[in-house]
Image (cartoon, rainbow over all chains, first blue to last red; front, side):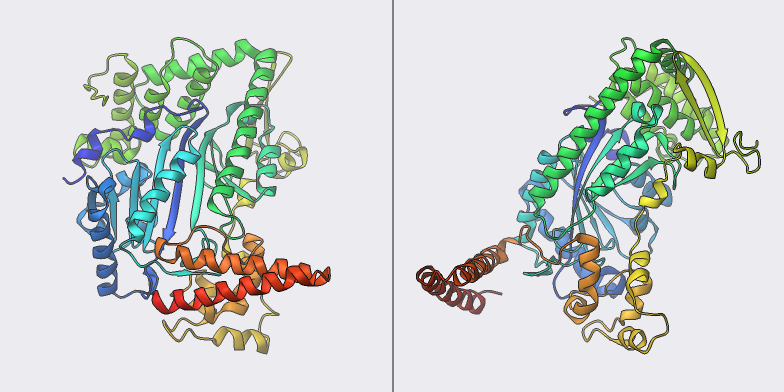
Length: 359
Length: 174
């Protein structure tokens, strides 16, 4: 199986390093690019998609920082493997679903990846652990410059990088942080905070869970606009706002502890106990319970799991990860049992599955 | 379960409140939750090109809308009405083709219609030159308004010189 490397390793962005990693799980910066003279992916003919794929592949091969990258063509992967990559934040559902020639190029540590023939010909992404907007921008920017030596990007002086959707035209950049805000949710200040975010031209959405449902207190905050501001200004403003949100999370946390320390601690330890000892557990339960434990880690409660372990648990207990690990497709009932076993192993209750930990 | 406030609609928002170490649980319907300010309407912040476009097109069925809808990109053949349905343009040539329709959309989405970010390495010098010329033009405008003709003359010379470079750059590049 082509995924082997990725399925046994754990991306660097999950290692719990990086500033404020108890609040900000990860940072992502992606750039949308198209090749000049070729219709956008959804209007391109098969031979044009082949041309795009081979041009990008050849440019990547010539870029020293990317020589180690794996090339995965979507059509050659099983639906399960594609779902694995979606869960890993490396491809979109859109890239996974389509029967056309689409690919993923990714460094083994997952710090840089590129989707080819998604909505745009090239979606270049840097993924980093914790709150590292500038570092992520700088690394994706450097790669973009290298690739531009070889690729002729569709660009206009007036409108910048031309993209299939006009919401991306200009810088083509979407920078985002995945942030965990349990105190703001518990103290019900989150609505006000989120409203504030949208008023300053940023977008926010609940991360795990659909529509209005908030799961696990995770939110993704990203820039909404790509014209009228350069990349650095956009990064700086997202950074400023994120810092303010981290501060208000901290204040809400202090408030909560003042009013209800014992209740909060009780909730956290009960969540930890459930994770550590359950025999059957759903994905949704894992997201919610591990959110409580993560909150405990942010509160500096001793004796809980590390941020890295919590990240690993969140990503690796997802359905496709469990099935790739088991080497076969599993019914939901089986998955819930296997998931509980895996988590017990990870948290040290001594489940029956040997746990392979990277690093 | 029914809403604890109105006792009419089903309870879909569930939460726990802790005040002075006392814990209370609430189960309310979406409407009451929103009225009480408990509900976080995440869905409303979700943003769709379709909605935006729907808000800015002319009266549905108008002759103007029908005409604009038929405008076609000479390069990829995409017609404007197709863009309105999908929110996706067909190729880079669609941008100049649908320029007048896209401008209000871009302004609404981004608050601007101007790229000020990076340029591909091979275009970077030309783009920098263009931006400098534009900046000088704005300065020139100001100088003229202030009747500072000496500065204006100097600026005009610099612009001329840069524009000459631009012509050379375009002739040599691409």
